[in-house]
Length: 172
Image (cartoon, rainbow, N blue to C red; front, side, top):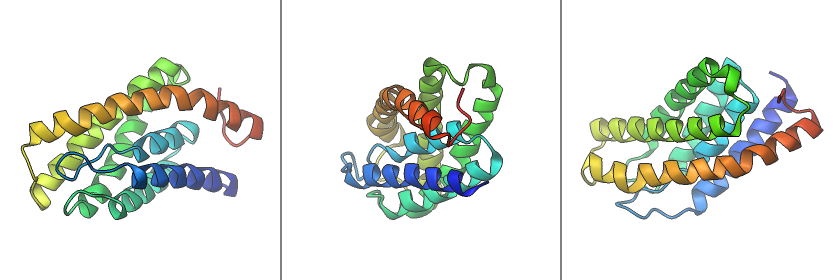
């Protein structure tokens, strides 16, 4: 991993942190995780194990620090690296289609749902949930998946164009 990759990943994580911090919690202290979209974009642009581990760990830590969910620090730290590697695994399986905007958008939806399940599951076992799992899933995770999918569909072509011009990533 070179310095260019680290700088690009840190910019993505930084933008994700700003998005995560400004979105208010709206249902029992939970809020849609806009930082996931930036993490997924980082994984798509830099698909190697070291980058995935780094972006997953840093995203989890920053997401945990800015969460409005009661006791959400540890579940975020668990959720993001797990989600990052699940997303990376699916991305590798779909490698032939990874540059398609439709595939990237679908992977974002799946990744957000995986993240929501891991987060709610770990929160349930570690700190308890402020409401029923299904209500939290339906009220926060599913709308976040829809929003992240649309956001990625808009962001992916712009980011790949910028990264191609700057020669920061191997984008096809």
